[in-house]
Image (cartoon, rainbow, N blue to C red; front, side, top):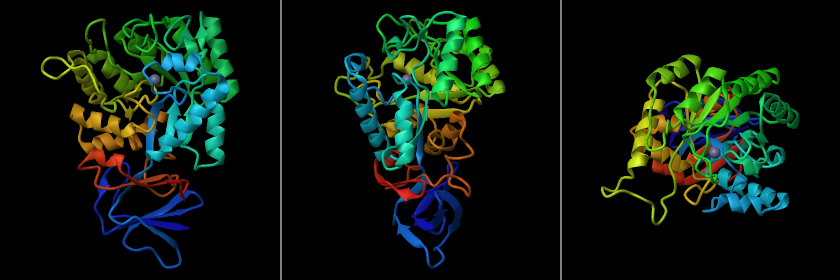
Length: 390
Ligand SMILES: [Zn+2]
């Protein structure tokens, strides 16, 4: 039994400014949370003036991506041993940043399944991982280089069965194009309704959730109509702007479609901005994301770490800052990387809250992140399953 104390506590829902809260963890699980000093006889970890909160959940990362300007080349020229080493480092950097659960939404060769086993066996190596394996994509489609190309209904069914057999936690389908892949465009769809329905039917047989990379409104609509559990990005981009569909958002809210916003980046020299200092296209996307996130759908805020130089592994704090910049309160942004992200990932009964019965995954940061979310960049301690790992 270990008693962890701090100045204040964010429980995944709200900030509790109590008389120095104490969290008791035993057997890797939170047993009780109360104000004031721990009973005698327990090992006490006193984190002084820090804020205690649930370990962060990054609902969308790519451990296999090297966060350089040419992520694709970095991957296609590397053999599996190199990629595996990169994923191990990325995993460690993610845990360094206080992320105790991460969902890897696209690897090559199911390497994520191996890393998941390694971080489960030794919690100091990285976060709990949920993995998708290679994302299912069209021939030559977005992220084809990860090895998940399929064509036609039977092939897509077989791809889902293969992923189930390999032990993935979630099926990821690339429903629309993306910016990262040459010749692929976010405003274009890659699959028809029959293929998307086949994915959901097959995944249900294996009790696997399905999430879709969807930028264009048509792709979001098709995924929701097919019964996808989740939508990634959800930017509603067109060739030259955005076209948010309020009726579609209402259907998503009614269906409980879970949305992962991928936001923010570490500022880079030469970031493009317009004459008034604001990139107009980025502004349109931000307006769209605000409308998505206020429509009543469950929302996670994630990094998409690995995708480029502005998205190094362990940069989830910048996603939280970006969500606050959209207009959300710091507390709302914190929920989107704790309790909200757990709901989106389908693990809301295990992680994302500091409450009895939840995993002893905790983060302590210097400062008060409900006042300044930038405090998330100042990690004081990280616990996984009750063990101090940072
Ligand atoms: Zn991604």
